[in-house]
Amino acid sequence: MKSFLIGPVRGMSKDRWKPSVDRLTAEGFDVYWPARDTDQADPIGFEICTQNAAAIARADVVHVIWDGLSQGALFDLGVAFALGKRVVALDLPPETTSKSFQNMVRYWELNGPPNYEQM
Image 1 (cartoon, rainbow, N blue to C red):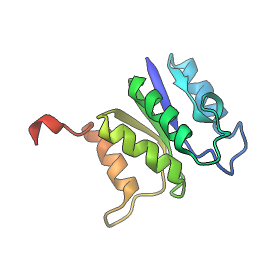
Image 2: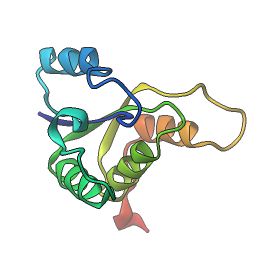
Image 3: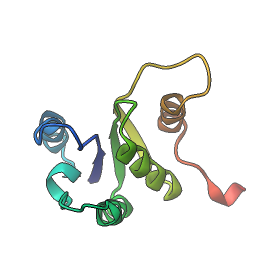
Image 4: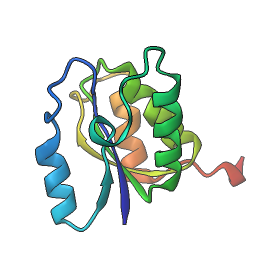
């Protein structure tokens, strides 16, 4: 089963999420990890977004680590949402009492991706 691991890249050590990648691999996932598998030498970010979007499209599931700050992680989540991917949250900011992105991701994980055919 193919997994795309969303996790902050910029400002993180290259191996920051390696324990999560190793765990998912041990569980049988073929993990696409942007810090390792996407060329990060893009000064604009367009090619990074393009490569990640293509990898998300090929994924069966999207695993999510979000620190509440990473804009790249939010972009990747938007792509996964638009493509109707299943998500599994590995680490998110705490739930809030009002509308928030982390609450939406938890809802998505529990209830499944959007069903655009019902709209």
